[in-house]
Length: 328
Ligand SMILES: [Zn+2]
Image 1 (cartoon, rainbow, N blue to C red):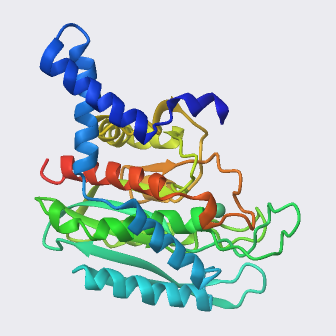
Image 2: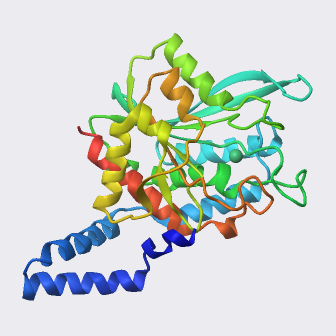
Image 3: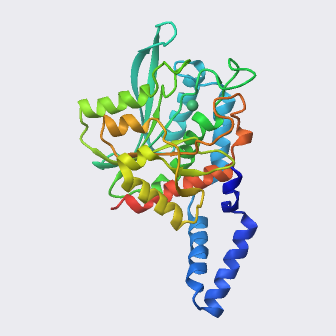
């Protein structure tokens, strides 16, 4: 996306801006000082947020090293074990919401599980951060090998990797409201566009509506394809339609810490796991997604096209959003 390249931030430029900003405030003042001071302040706030992009990227690589992780596969089972151990060690309560579907090709039963990771379980007002953790069975948009190997570094791995690192900092986010991370199975157990998407999020949303739990989710954010090394996240139209206040809050958090990859323009309308959450469960949920990823559903959706910086920016925006809302 060359049109957006002018908005990208480079550390050297930032350090320069920071120094200029401090100098202007300290010695010059004047009409531009406030603007420069805001930029410098945002940089300071960004640096202070405890989220390590390199650690998140290491998680992304570890997920890809498992190999393909489609619903019901051995790879998915390995991933479930890894995630359960990871989040339990960090102090969360991890449960599996299990259900069964018929395989779209041969009708055999497939065991599915949403992974629900609970922080501060006593809180009856809760926030939801979610991602899908299954990978598409095949890279069917790959021009050369549409039945090749798909590990979903960005599509399936990136959101999970951000939550894995964010989990390390949840103690710093304890407040009046609790937080749940929910990893959806069956987002894309699909072989053709006729097959059903969003199996896990729909099951989760139906269960929430049919048997209301003793707590309420006040807002939700879905992370999908947030690892693109050329990160650019625009406001998604369905998110604006169902949960505009969450969009405003999250983009406000991004602006406060100077993450300009959260672009204020409106992007493509996306059908994703946030739809069942909004339409069935009535949980105001937005989709944070960089849909402009050249390796989408191809064999090249690999860690090398994702970056620690992208994961860090998204992770820090999520931390800042939660920080601003857990006691509201
Ligand atoms: Zn996908």
